[in-house]
Image (cartoon, rainbow, N blue to C red; front, side, top):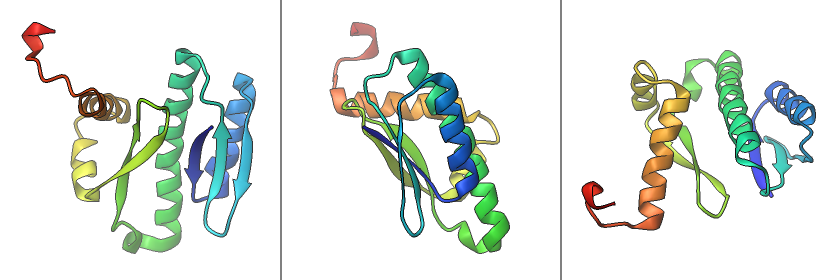
Length: 133
């Protein structure tokens, strides 16, 4: 199962509603600070891409809601989701100021594509030059 984490109930519920609209089987959980959604790993690529795009959008909403609640003091950590070849999604911690600068010139989707390309290169370890691939 793939895990999606939220820190506010509103984007969590929006994500659940979206997954139900897509017809995706899901499980949910809640602890003191997190709202979780689990979906099967065996999704077709198109559905998987839709889910990831929606999750990225809702993470931005999640961030705005937390900022509204806590003020600017909460922006001491930021992360980028990285999908590994085995299907797991992990977060790479990145300086929030760097992410903000990047998002001024590229979209969230473009940043995600870049991060995915780097993760794939690291996991596959192809040392050949690009011209030989």
